[in-house]
Length: 208
Image (cartoon, rainbow, N blue to C red; front, top):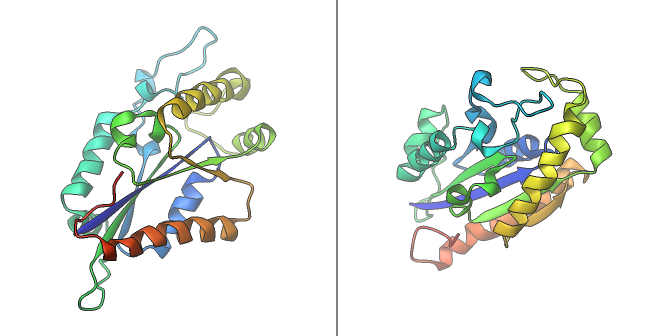
């Protein structure tokens, strides 16, 4: 059984989920694990001196649980897909099955144990003005308080990005303003090339 793990990271409202879901629809035997589903309860997230909840920190997430979910997929990608209401696509006789895991989230590349598992790493970025406008148009639970974007979200993005760039060397930067179909086509072409490369390998994994 051959596996490929793709990381789709990026800033808030940069298009991570949209790209991940589009990829998942087009890649046979693929699943998505989203970092946003592992946030701790609001009561466990600390508040800074300005009264802003510190959601943009790894400590606000159950990263141990996220790693357990990834490891469950690694143990049996086929069973994982079936258990998540997925249908395994059977390929022609003699063609190896390739199972793909798409991990998406705003801090996936800042968590070294997770980062080291990924074969492909993509990071979506958009300008400050676009990011702020998109963020303001969405409703969060709990909702963003006044001044939250400039007082917490953007400064933490800059801090987290700096740490990420010091940790990751094989990151592919993507322009989140690129037309959706064009962006998807570019990433899909890159990923498909790696999947096809499995035919030239004897082991079951591409190097991370």
